[in-house]
Image (tube, rainbow, N blue to C red; front, side, top):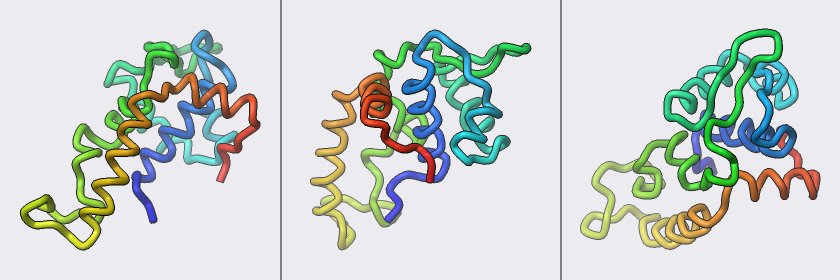
Length: 145
């Protein structure tokens, strides 16, 4: 079951890679990251450009250029990142993608998904990208499919 889009998955993996391996001080080559994470360079570039336009990242051209954090990972909540990647209404969407799903016209998954997404939202609003980056580094979590 896919809860986030492929763009969301790749964006999250890329920012976790940056937070775990480079921290907030360095720029990371998008090409290097795409190769390390086995993600299409062009697709990853598009995703990271979107996050740059939303004010989370900054890009730098040149031999030591790449992409870096504009906002420190310690200040990026997972909920903010998910909303930036998936849309502001991520925690309000129907799991089945049905328009108008709600208390008045619920889908078969409504009550279950409502409970799960409230729990997710609560957890995502207290977890930073730095927290996950540190766990990834310390516990050697994998980021490659």
